[in-house]
Image 1: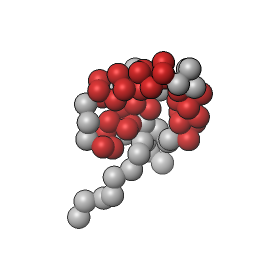
Image 2: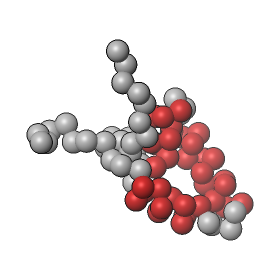
Image 3: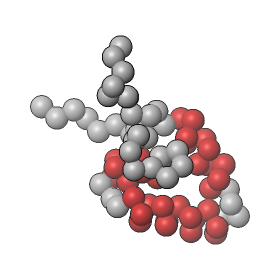
Length: 70
């Protein structure tokens, strides 16, 4: 049975902290499209997207490390 999708910042394929890549993976979109949309929204909202990105970076958990055993 498939496990439910979770919004997690990936360890691979990210540019800064992986927030845009996380949304792209979750919704099944191309990460480049999400990044361009984020940049446009940030520019048109007087750069408040930078604050939102930072908050999302703190809130969205990172994928677990496959090489680390718990």
